[in-house]
Amino acid sequence: MTPDSSGTGFPDDGTWSEESDWDIELGEGGDLEEFVPVPTVAIIGRPNVGKSTLVNRLIGRREAVVEDVPGVTRDRVSYEANWNGRRFMVQDTGGWEPDAKGLQQSVARQAEVAMRTADAIIVVVDATVGATSVDEAVAKVLRRSKTPVILVANKVDDDRVESEAAALWSMGLGQPYSVSATHGRGTGDLLDQLLEVLPATPREGTGGGGPRRVALVGKPNVGKSSLINKLSGDERSVVHDVAGTTVDPVDSLVELGGKPWRFVDTAGLRKRVNSASGAEFYASLRTRGAIEAAEVAVLLIDASQPITEQDQRVITMIVESGRAMVIAFNKWDLVDEDRRYELGREIERDLLRVPWAARVNISAKTGRAVQKLVPAMETALESWDKRISTGRLNNWLKEVVAATPPPMRGGRLPRVMFATQAATRPPTFVLFTTGFLEAGYRRFLERRLREEFGFDGSPVRISVRVREKRERRK
Image 1 (cartoon, rainbow, N blue to C red):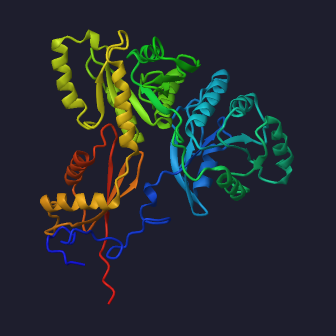
Image 2: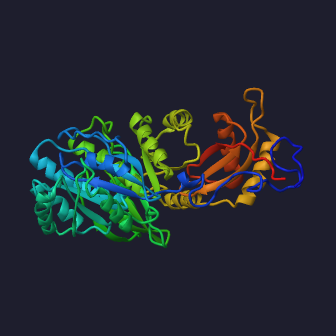
Image 3: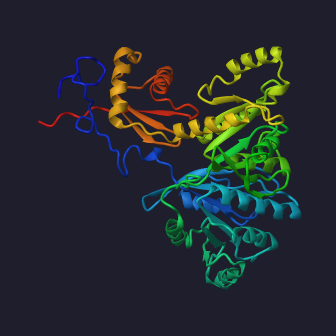
């Protein structure tokens, strides 16, 4: 190989250093494994059945809050777990209502959220109590689930409780797996069974040529339902509607641009999730669930009003989820020249962190420019799915780093030696370097990456791996 005289870490002959010079594992069990999406198992059940204790058993450490107090609403929390070399996420659920009637409705909603977003579901029942009306409400929802469901009979601390556990066959969810989350009894067999039904990779929403999944999100009264009605009416045909309550999503298969799209209309965010309760809590919860289950999120913002903190919170949810994004400024028919000027200033100030998000000015009421949503969503999804070959990526990187080297740290110049795209959905890149790269330089690389390869409408994630160069074998 030609020696490097440029100081960039890349050889001068136009090639780039790879595994021969660097200890880079790109395969199974390698350094990039953490960037590969893993499936999620949701743990659901009524309060005080031992869900959080079971979560701690499954992940092998005490992280979940063990005491479940009915009426304490909290968001779903995910923990990483590993069993027999397979990684997956365990999602603990909360947000229970204090009264019996509300509780039954709450667990049913949690089951629906789990069916929408998880790759497998574990429903936990207290074997010493048996199946209550609340447990039966969960079972009724889960019996129509296409997501794998495992029924766990918890608190089976000895053989005397086994007969009570066997009675749970009546719930119609298949074999009840007897465990004691407190003592660890039966949890190994449960994990083995979980790996049997858990897919190797998370569901991609609509892989295999099906309709792409769109989460329609935004604060209350921003025009989400009006937009669905406009899109599904007139010359566009609705294939199927699943009705819900005011806090439930309404899934609609709508034909746009000659192909079907699955829209989820969600109730708006009213309060912060950790302070909301009742119907408002579940509006927030299901908005987040819709985003997680979607491939692209269309955020509606009221263009006639100042951009609010609520709008910013929804943007944060979308960015954290790694979904493609389109921002639709609705009610454009109410925007005058003065408001356009103010909105331009607000966009520069409040949307600075998502300059890559496509923006469309529409009016759901009049139908103005709603047809522009389709090409914006298609572009965003194309970017979200995009993969850059390693050779092309590194040849580009060589030129960029040679023209603009990273800043010095501690009197030494970090060298960017090699890059690879570790994942798509969203595009995730890993840079192997000899030193830490400042956040400002990583943002510079992201800007140049977008200039070269596009990625309009999709977040891009860049991670740095500091590696010591191996000594050459003699």
